Amino acid sequence: MTSEISPHIFIPEAELAFHPERTFDVDLHPLRGLLRFGPYSSGLVPDPIRIATIAPARQGARLYGFMKELAAEFKPTERKDYLPAWPGFRKAFNLDMRGAVKDCHVEVDDRLEAEMKDSATPHVVLADRLLRAIQSLEARRDAFDIVFIYIPQSWAAGFVGAAGDDFDLHDHLKAATAARRIPIQLVREDRALAYPDRASVMWRIGLAIYAKAGGVPWKLADTDPEAAYIGLSYAVRPTESDRPRFVTCCSQVFDAEGAGLEFVAYDAHEIDVQRENPFMSRTEMFRVMSRSLDLYRRRHSGRTPRRVTVHKTTEFKKDEIDGCMEARHLCEAVDLVQVVEDVGWRGVRIERDRQGGAKGKPNGYPVERGTLIPLGDRECLLWMHGDVKGVAERSYYQGGRSTPRPIRLIRHAGHGSWDETARSALALAKMDWNNDALYDMLPVTMAYAKVLARVVKRMDGLGSTPYQFRFFM
Image 1 (cartoon, rainbow, N blue to C red):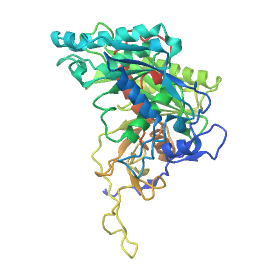
Image 2 (cartoon, rainbow, N blue to C red; image 1 turned 90 degrees about the horizontal axis):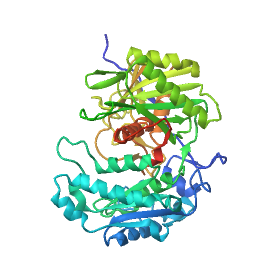
Image 3 (cartoon, rainbow, N blue to C red; image 1 turned 60 degrees about the vertical axis):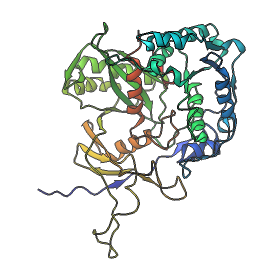
């Protein structure tokens, strides 16, 4: 037996596309690509994007001031090797953003803070008042596209519930507004208004606004047109809930270009809990796969994907594998891949000695993003985080500190080399439109699934109609 591991493989950084027909409108850097070519869906988003507002009494002007900032220009004061200057909303997205008509702006009365202070459950008081304000805007739904909600720090007592109370204001509001098909953007005094690098704030909020209005900033450029990717996650409701404890949440079914604007979610009844982790029955898994592929076909004119890759964070049990294989008649090949974040491995780049031998000293740069080390037929290590070429003047290492750790991919079904599985995971890590970073630490199948699971469990009724992710961002 040897302790030697397999030689590593390097997978290049995925390019992003910024036009559906001009194949040369591509870039490795998402923000640089936007500035060079404009967004992928340019001309397809209503111009202007109309913003309704909800604010505390006599503080609506702070929101209007923030909206004016979005139209201004700012130079970055951090991440200067990556973050370009913010050019203003119109120059970034080729359209305008402005306040909606006068009766689409609501101010919460000034008795709220006193009522919160006098209540044993200030989060209930705050949530109720904000939901009433949102309901008052519903009558004018045709007059706005997005609602900005200003959250001052003086409301902090209502941001979360008491110990043991599974309440989060952000997720509670997202659940309520998603059910109403109303996209919202929370503007917190201690975050968006206080963060010193205004270019960074504007890029993040600007991207979110564009995507929430139905826009597509970019897609993946070089992909297999007959591939689809599904991310599975589970939401766990509190034990005192009178509804099924588990929600099976199927994250968006992404096509080969990384586009997945809808997802399906429903209460799961046939669940086996092992070590606090829920696993689906064969029937439950077959139902998830069938509904997910139905969603794909509806978005692709009835076309069925040739290959489907399913991601989840826990292992695939035999019943789950059997349920997926039962649905295999819906496509040609199914790969079931477990994505493990917490691994003990680290990697250090070693410089070869002058004779080209293996001995050497640690390099000044970290392991390259895209480094892949097979651990056998069923497992590999993949560095989603690491050094990237072609993004900055010199090498770019996102975050700029710590030794990057890999994720571990475990294949529970499927075959072939690791190259395509790892390549798609790396590419999908660049498809989070709610973030201005070059990449996430996880493929978007898993990153979005986590968000969906957190919010979906708070929704009163899931129904059978697919949801658009832009309402949950």
